[in-house]
Image (cartoon, rainbow, N blue to C red):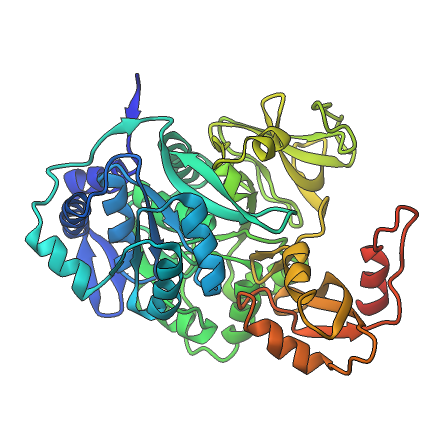
Length: 502
């Protein structure tokens, strides 16, 4: 039985290049040996707290040095990491803790209010990262190495909302994540040990975790963390630290292209990757003109570790596409209407993007029906519509479901609608994404008022702020007397997009 651990990514660097700088955050500089020593001590503390192989440990932290150390400590102890999205409300965090069956929450002081409230409601113990956890680690017996696991054992559970509006846990194995990091580092891209990457993408997100942290470290390169993204600050930091690699979502590229004009000096970037949402070609062109470097756009989902395809130097790049599948991964276009089986379509035809390969997840935690719906004939159905041309370049055309991607974060209209329907002034609501230059898409709620209700847009927005994550609440509220309905009495969201998107 093959064994493998995600923790090997850090452990092997500590063995092969112990004195190399692994991590930079502000004035803090840590070598691979130091980060691994810290992770082993923390793993010892976790074992002392009762964490056993296979136990799920929730991790709620920003892009500070505490995140990678705790992440690899959980993996080293044989635990399963459950990263918690930092924009969630306490009720949403509570769902993640309960649904995942987490036995412990490791929470950064910056998230203490939300995390502690959620953990109390879920009945899960909390340990604060920083002083409290470091004291426990200092008193613990460090693990001599990582606890090895079977290759297909769970390593990370990413929570991703479905169309039902209830976030589901996508279970990724050690094999999924180690392969995705390895193939990203050495096949799809040309990551070199002397590269220095900016870690500005949230590490709780699959893109930041695999592409910025795990892939960069798989190649033995250095990661410079930026806890809060600000374009001018990012440019300064990249210049100061000689960063040559940047990973971002389209909103970051919009901001960097705009901030470039006012900067005294620009970093000399060699590799730039975009993902998380479609990158408008105009943004790609503006950024490439300002920084004189190419952006390699890719595509993936939490369920695919996440990278499935990317524009790769080997195949050349094509603006407006998501490139070619990763090494060892098949990405094809299937007939979208045929749900019970996979019927592949020839080049040029529009259909649903389907994926199979070493990157495809084990399934949704505790949800066999949802897993069976997503996994058909050995392929993962992404729910995204796309095409594949004669040269093998893939393109995402639209989404099968009405998902909104705001600033690289997925927002599921159904989830927002469920919350807004609880507002006393709302009789009916449809949530749509409207084009937005900064965030890619903005969340818009189209409301039919309850009889006699007088609630206005700003009031509904303020109310929803208390009940929804910061990336989810509607910044824009429109009112209508009645919704446009289709023959099956479904709200025609495409008509609403046309009406309000102008």
